[in-house]
Structure formats: C-alpha cells, structure tokens
Length: 142
Image 1 (cartoon, rainbow, N blue to C red):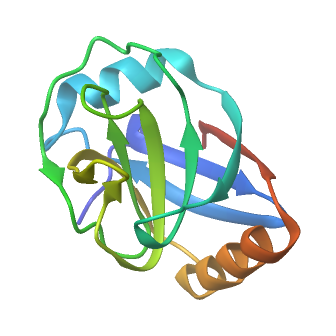
Image 2 (cartoon, rainbow, N blue to C red):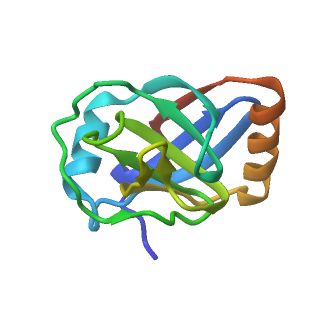
C-alpha cells in the first residue's frame, strides 16, 4: 500500500517511537479534524474495560464527528476515536486483543490511524502504562 506523504505520521508514546499513517480514504472527516490538531499531545493511560489498549480520556470534548470507518474490535496498532455520546469522548490505541467498551457497554470508534512500524513494541508500551501509569504521547506529521 502506497501512503501519501501527507498521511505519514510519527507517534512518540512514552519511550517508544512509531511510524504511522492516517486512514484518509476510510475516515476522511476524522483524519481532517486530527490533521488540523497536529502536533497533538496528551497522555495515555491503560484501558479499564476494553482489554489490551491504552487510551486518552477526553471527557465532553466535541470534535464534531460522527461514525465513519468505526469498529469495536481494533487490531493491534489501530487507533480509534470515539466521538462521544453514551460515554465520554476518547482516543484508544490497541496493542493486543480489544473489545472496545465502557461501563455502559460495547462502543465503536472511528479507525483513523494505523501504526506501521515496530508493532512488537506496542505490548511493551501497554505493560509500561499498566504498571507505571500515564505516559506522554505526541502525534506529529512525519
């Protein structure tokens, strides 16, 4: 798969750096919103209900998004954004098996970024976040 240069990203999460890409063809509106936010900085914490993932809780933040390219089962390296509604707005990065959920039940989020390098380091990021707590994350154009 050929990636448009404008879709290439770098994600620095804790001590790890990953190459990634926007999923512009599948989630054009979500990617457009996040492209305007670059560089995007936040913290990730370990998920509570979803399985093997880290997330950025965003409370009542409204990105103005609806569902596109949404899934409840992101694969390792896939990043999704839940636009809010029955649970709080959040961004989730899967590092293993995930069934995206909250205390109110199963949710679906827009798959808009895919990590394309060093997938073997994702589980280490997950374990580090689980045992040591929140880690800084930065998403930037590559």
